[in-house]
Length: 169
Image 1 (cartoon, rainbow, N blue to C red):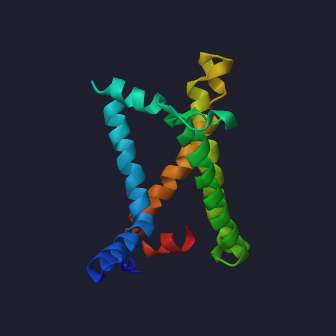
Image 2: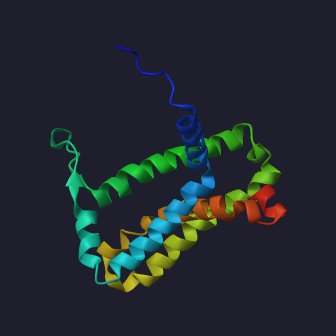
C-alpha cells in the first residue's frame, strides 16, 4: 500500500495558495462584513424575516460549559470580543513601533476614535431619552458596531482613499 502524498497535486496546491492569500487580505474580510450586513438587513425586512430570526435564534454549543448560545449571542459576545482583541493588538503595535508612537501624528486618529465612540452613543441616548431607563442601557452597541464598520469600510476603500488620509488615518 502506498503512502498518501505529502503535498497536494501542483494544480490544487496553487489553487489553495491563491485562495489562502485572497482570504488573508483585509479587503475580503471588510467586503464580507458589509455584504453580510446588507443581506441581513434585506432578509430581516422582507417576507423572509422569520427565516432570518430562526437562524439568529438557533442555539448550539456545549451546555456543560454554559455555552449553549444562539447564533446572535455567539456573534455579539464571541466574535466581537475576538475582533476587539485583534484591533487592540494592532493599536498597541501602532503605538509602540508604528505611526502612532509620535504624539503629533497620533492626535488626529485618537480624536477621531474618541468621536467615533462618543457621537454614536450620544445620538442613541438622545433618540432613546424618552423610552425609559431600560432603553438607555444599549448606548454601547452603536459605539462598538461603529468601530467594526469603520474598520471594514477602511479595509475595502482604504487603497482608493486620498494619500493624505492613508498617512494620518
